Every structure is written in structure tokens, then in C-alpha cells.
Image (cartoon, rainbow, N blue to C red; front, side, top):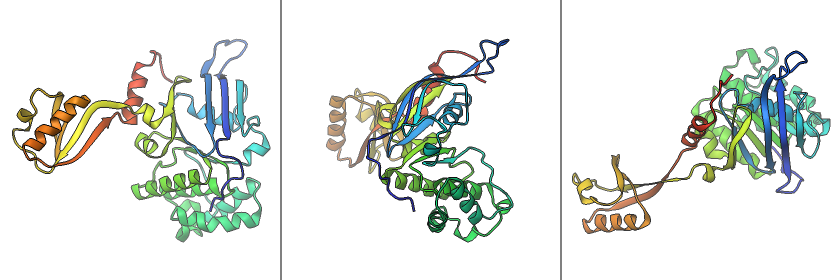
Length: 322
């Protein structure tokens, strides 16, 4: 079980200013490839932070800079107020890399012990956390089996548990639900929200935008080494102007009944969708009630995070993506 942090809510956990990284730059090859081009962001304590972007956007490079795994960058980067790679900051971080590899000759329980001790945690504390964490990821019955016997989904769930075994204050998850079935994804979402409630900051890189939309507070969308937009889920999924109205019964002449009100009428299961302003919505409700139709729900439509993501990427400046 992850314990609550002793630090104060609202603390800045990750701070990046004008971060730049160029790969392949040499005396003979002066330009190189700009993987990061002036990144600025801050992540506070207890946030669930989504890092999104297509392949080659610079997401992994950014994470590796923060963990001290990439050198030769310019700008400013701080983790818990310390430089990347500082031993004190690294002990506070749990990391689940994409396509991670666990030692195949160890059991699940042994992997938890190994990674906990490598992170600098006390052996007794690690042992006390192993059981509850394995139970949370539904791996208790497989704890004494060798990793080589695990499915991809089992390895992913164990990988998440090992990232938490030393009680970190920041957890970086790279594609955490990759290869995990729907039940497992729901369990991972529950764990992430539990971490947030305890004041732990969670940094998620995922291609499953629906998952990100369900659990993240703040999202950054990157492309070609720069940030296109960042904000809350509400800010990145604005209302479209369309309204879905669910009815108990849908009459055949519904479109004629609502003629002259709104735009882009479309029938849908159990009701209809229509683009309306506030006055038109009131008029629609009046007409439905005059007909004696029962309104079950009125739901303003929003852009999904996926729709916002695709729109931003398509509008981004042209160029060859690696």
C-alpha cells in the first residue's frame, strides 16, 4: 500500500523550461535532429498528468531527460527541485518503461524484492508492500512463478507493481495498459486514482486516449519536439454546440416536429442529436412536452480527447515525422 506523502499539496514535482535536445549533432553534422524544441511545463503534486503525441513527438526523450538517462540537453529541468539523475530525486520516482524487460529467471515476488532494494528502500518495508501490491494487480497467485511463464498482460501488471514497491512520490508510466485486458485496465485506473488521492503524482504516456481522458487532470499534446497545447481535460474537450436528447419513445415524425430549430438533426438510439443555442434548446423542450414525449436526458456533446488530438496534429506545421 502506497503511503501518503509528507510533502505539501500543490508542490511542483516536475519543472521544465526551454528544454532542448538535439540528436546526431557533431562537428561534421552541425544540425542534427531536434528531438525537443523549447519545452516548458510544470507538474504539481497529486496530479495525474497525461503526455500525448504521435511516434517521434519527443515524449520518451522528455522522460529520459527527467530521469537522467539522456545527456547533452540545454535549458532547465528539475525533479523535486533537483537536477535530473540526482540520486535523491531518483529514489522518489517509480518508473514503468514501455516494452520493459523483467529478469525471466526470477519469480514475480523476487522481482518485487529486487526492484525495491535497487530503489534504496528498506528490505522490511519492501516485503511489507509486496503482498498488498500484488493483490491490487491480481498477481498474488502467480507470485512464485517464473517471469518466463508470464503472459504480456501479467508482465505489464507486475511491472506496474514494481514501479510502486518503494513507495514513490512520482510514478512515470509509459503505456501502462499495453497488452492488458479490460478488467486489468479498470484495475490500473483504480490504482492511479488511489495514488492521486494519496498525493502521489502520476505521469502517463499512452496511446489509449480514452483511458487518458478518464483519469488525467492535465494533458500535454506534443508533436515534432514541441508542445502544441496543454490544459485540463475540460479545456481540451470543449463543447461542440450539439446536444443529445434521449426520449422514452421516439415518434416517426420527430424531425418534422422540431423543424426550424437547430442544425444537423440526427437520429440516434433512444433519441436524437441537434446543434442548438440556449433559446433553441428551450424551444425544443417545449415542443417535446407539448407532444407529451418523456425526456430521459439532455447531454451537451463535447469533443473527445481523441478528436482534439487528431485535429491538432493535422493542423501542425508540415514536415516529415521520423
